[in-house]
Length: 93
Ligand SMILES: [Zn+2]
Image: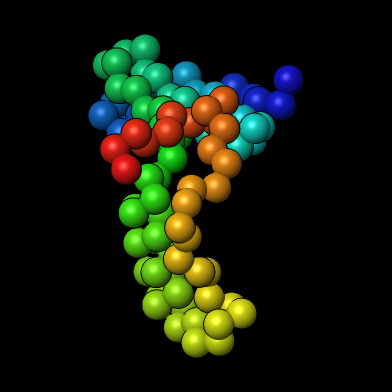
């Protein structure tokens, strides 16, 4: 097992009272649940649709001031492979 449990911080109770679990496989994720007040936080995974992904790629190029064509992330014409084992695909494309 690659994950580990620990005492997490609950922002509502303002103390380390939450049951927390973190794992780095198959990607970084965390689950926190406070047994006192019920505060819960979980990693959410999903895929962007093509328009959203291209918008993020464009922002990345601009934020990093990537000028050279070989450094820039190109705009995609179709989505890369998106395995639903790791996140839900956005069907609204
Ligand atoms: Zn709490």
